[in-house]
Structures are given as C-alpha cells and as structure tokens.
Amino acid sequence: MNDNSRKIETKYIRPVLVLRKFNRELFLGIPMSTKLKDNPYYKSVTVNNRIVSVLISQIRVFSAKRIQDKLAELDKNDFQKIKGDVIDMISFSLPPKRESRG
Image (cartoon, rainbow, N blue to C red; front, side, top):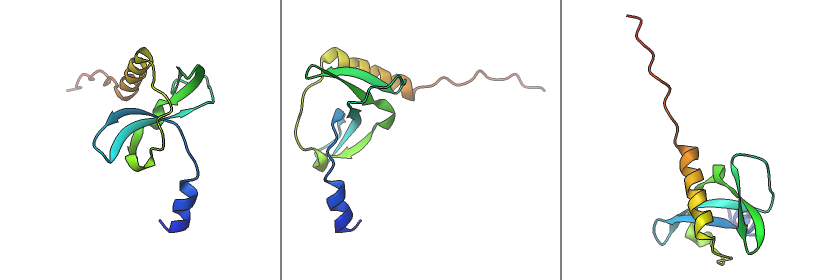
C-alpha cells in the first residue's frame, strides 16, 4: 500500500461494535450503520437514543490503530442479543446423513 492510499483510507470514519479484544493490537468488531434495512444480517439496536444497524455479516478483525474515540456503550441486553445473532449466523446444522446404498 502506498502513502496516498493510506491517506485516503484514513479519511473515512465508521462506527464499529467491539465484540472482543484479542490484544493491544487487534479486536473483533462489527461495522455499524445508520441505514436500517429489512435484512436478516442487519440487526437494529439503540445507541445514544438513535436506532442504528449492526451489520453482522461484516464481522471481522480490526487493527486497534483504527480506533478513534469511544462513541457510546451498548446496552447489556442489546450486546447479548447481537452476540447471540452472530453465533446463530455462524453456526449451522449439518444435513442428515444419507443411508448408504450398499
């Protein structure tokens, strides 16, 4: 990455829900948006008396260097709900075993 692309990249600030801190350099986070959609991967929560979406399909590891400021703290119930939604999204049931034709 050259210096110009780094400058462009740092212009954009996006709110992120921090799910888990791994160490001083990395954390697991989920981007947030003010756009509300009727989509199973957009989960609505209230932050600072405003309804926002947590985009659970975009969960990923972020560099802690990207953190600017703490904007708010999510309500404990909303945080637990989002964690459950993430677990539901990544867990899947295997199809039943087919009988061998033997």
